[in-house]
Image (tube, rainbow, N blue to C red; front, side, top):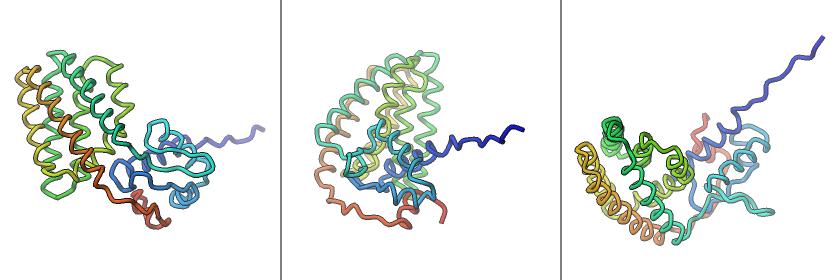
Length: 241
């Protein structure tokens, strides 16, 4: 008689990674904050093994840094990192706009409008985390129908860091989110009318202003104390009590 097989919990590692990723992107963790494997394992009520594997995945995405004999830390960008990431975004996003087939523009505009509505709802409730998520999805929409898989893959590789910088820094910048909201509305009009060159000009200016705001906000961030307890960690990871 054959022994019953136990199906591995394949979804456990990505589920843990998703929770930690969301907490980093939503600024529940500060830049450079220590992520203790033991504390995370206690919070998720699992062994350290799936936690370690989840952290390895997040390190590949650039969201955490694993330092041998020291620990795991939320990534800490430098001023140079922030500037280069924004410049890279400009290249990718303007290319996505330029390559989008004319037949796909209405579909893209529909998604852009959907995310603008989500921003409206977030502003109405004062939920800046929700605003940041809608902002991320707005810019991601340019890649959904651009017709180039490699361009989309390139953007996916930086998406976590882009989203994290947006939540950690953009909402702390002076004049936000009013300025970015106005830019988004203008972009929708230009794309819906097929005025790509004008849209790209607005998009470039939008990201360059974002870069300046990020750099300014980053230099004004207070130092974090890196402390956390299991109960507090569970709340920040949005785990059930």
